Amino acid sequence: MGINHLRLSSELIAALYPESLVTGNEPSPVKENVRISKPVAAKISVYPFLGENNRSICFLANSPEEDFLPAEQLVFLQKMLTACKLSFNDIALLNIAQISFDLAELRVQLHPEIIFLWGISPASVALKSGLPDFRISVLDGISIIPVLSPDLMSGNSTEGTELKQRLWICLKKLFTL
Image 1: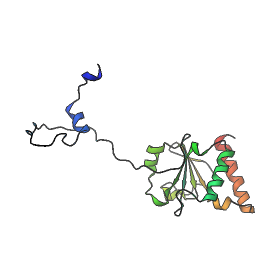
Image 2 (image 1 turned 135 degrees about the vertical axis):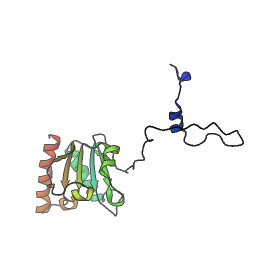
Image 3 (image 1 turned 90 degrees about the vertical axis):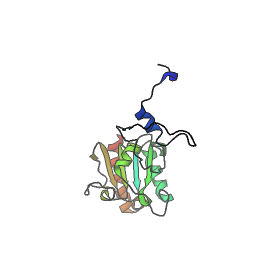
Image 4 (image 1 turned 30 degrees about the vertical axis):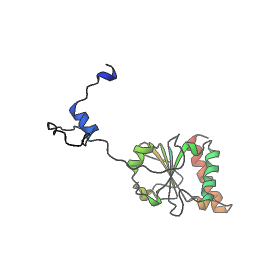
């Protein structure tokens, strides 16, 4: 069947054109009761993110003063990604400070396989609390990794170095480095 010979059902036409296509003094059309069996696609929030999400890896952060992260944390994240043989093209960085976040909508939009909770608690994104920091937990087929705030890892303090080592152990296991 060629494109010039398509036959559309009245239900499909009604779904495609919910409002009248013609206005003016034309005779009113014959009304027929049309029932749509499936609702037209529901509107889904589109989360703004930095990166291209080529590897379905999401970083959720909470930085109210920034678009995504402060500059020093972006530098730290870039170094971490480079050490893992990744780049910003491979991830999606979301700042959830100024948006209404819903994990189900994130799953529909970005299809994450890995989610880093970058300085936010699991409970703040409707995940079960008690997920251990720097440990991979699998929930509904998604690897979830809570990470302490990167500002604690910046610098060369003893505590920062220890946290970076714990993060590196987790990253090696996650990305088989």
